[in-house]
Amino acid sequence: MIPPTQQTPSPSDELTPQRISDLTAQVADQLGLDPAGAKQVKFTNNAVLILPAARAVLRIAGSPPVAGRVPGVIAAAHWYAAHNIPAVRLWPEIQHPIQVGPHLITVWEQTPTGGPEPTPADLAAILHAIHDVPDPHPDCIPAWRIVEGMKQRIQDADNTDPSALAFLTAEAGEIEESLLKLHTIPPLIPGGVIHGDAHLGNVISSPDGPIICDFDSTSVGPREWDLTPAAVGSIRFNYSTDVHAGLVASYGVDVTTWQGFPILRRLREFQLITSVLPALNANPALKPQWQHRFDTYREHDDQTPWTPYADVAS
Image 1: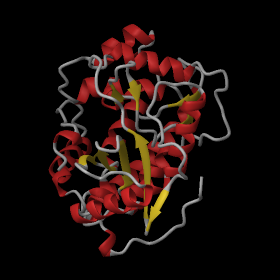
Image 2: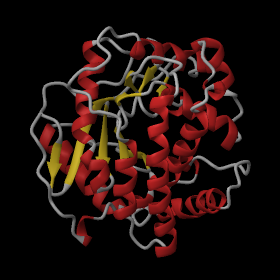
Image 3: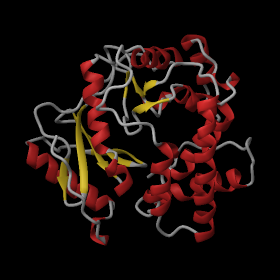
């Protein structure tokens, strides 16, 4: 992997639709990939585009904090491949990441379509595959320092109410302190490599079975964290499927019964608010849902439903 260089983005580097289109064309030309039919499928922390003619997927880091996680993403992808974890694979035989100006881009093999919709049992099986690898603390995988990334995203937020940012900064400090208490609570699961953002939206169906994607948060930390997104999702989102109940049945552990769960729930909800802060300018369609989440969180309203960003993102 070629270490990326740090460049300060200029206003012309903002990931507007035109800029994303230009980057896609440039990377496709550089790698000899057919860009015909290129389509953006997601833009929250990363702009994700499918190049169907090339059967490739591009992920363009949407902000400097997200770009800072790219080396860890690449290391995680290699680790998953080395241990035959059912996960998406990097495009072979090229150096990652690709850098165009300040933008870091990774290229992935497109997952073939087919197979049944992923289930909570599928997610549980993938998590067991990750958690059961004999080497739980590989040097190539970064340590779990989730609040550091949140603080950086708060600092990099643009056009956000200063009072809201002040609240989020203070909240980050309180959460960081509360996480220290986890060391005094007996774990449900021995710590080790975690996916870090393990929810059903990151599981993809394929003819060969379900696979997991999105390695931005893969790290070495408390494995209860991998069970927390489904638990919080069952509380905060009106999903048609109770993923948490299915995960408990298949994985065999109910994280909501753990003494440390209130700490992790607060952390997860805070993450779901701060994750898109640096991308709000580039993707303003996220702003109303972000504001709704922020307002209910600040008011200690722990029951009002939220909507997934993917359902409102342009």
